[in-house]
Image (cartoon, rainbow, N blue to C red):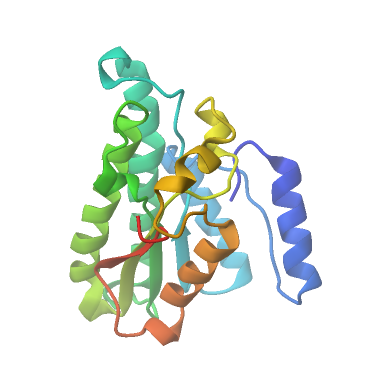
Length: 216
């Protein structure tokens, strides 16, 4: 799934195909219920759904909470919470034994911000990630006897483009000295954690989160 960066989506599909996987990219705003349903229907062309990685997330310019607008909050909540809820619901309907599914794994992407709070920068973003942690616990327990595991990864300071969206492209390097491992993490390190959580190697893990934050 992609929303705004078509070249990145295209290159990701090409990389998957080069490695022998069948892949497609579907444009959908995860906050749009009908668009998400259509995306899942397209994904069915690849076979039965077994894994959902709930990875869509946005943030806005760094600022104090008392400077934020309701419009900003609603935009962040629509993608980070409502979007994640819609995707998790659609996956549940397809994977749960209650609905005739063969089981599977939902991996939510939370953030260390959920327990750090992101004061002075992204309190609203941090709050949405706290909601993802709660979703993971509640839905994980609800689906545990229906063949669906629900887990989350909480990345810390990671080298991605999301920092530029907040107005500080090099933020990861500024914050890195406060990380016990003294460096930012990489997308590949987060991806490896997601892959483990989605795999049979984590078959007895559900309704919980794994921190990938360098000890922060």
